[in-house]
Image (cartoon, rainbow, N blue to C red; front, side, top):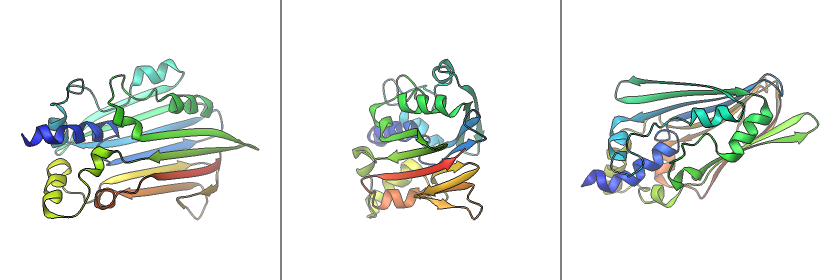
Length: 218
């Protein structure tokens, strides 16, 4: 009975890249040479709960490799087990223009991904004068807000889905020859910008929207 109630949340977390324990980085070596790398980790309890959702059972939580390759990207996907977690590492390589097209069309999503997957979106665009801009946005959907809070019962529900929240969260990053400006933290060398969203903060009191915007020179 508990898994039936948690299944919609499990489907959401799978769609968003692995229980919010995910690192996503855009790396560039020029306009024609870039890669988007994702490392996602999903606890076995989440995968088990997702088996109660029609159309989700048996579906891999990694990106749709074939769809991305059809649009001109070179994609590698690696999956393995680490303790009680399933790990997915996806790397998509190609020109910035091609990566931008895939991100805009959400071609990286599996064809049967639930609607909640659209809570996480990417926009990569030419900003002119040799610059590019990446915008990553997370708008926490109602399913996530349902289990947000800090009372004892809510905490028990969160633990049943995610286990410990320690060390879990989303990290968005951009690595380029020059970071011009960013809403995240910029390295002293101005070659990396990143934004970290701890899972504990997200579950305590989610904001209407989280946005990471970075303008960079490839």
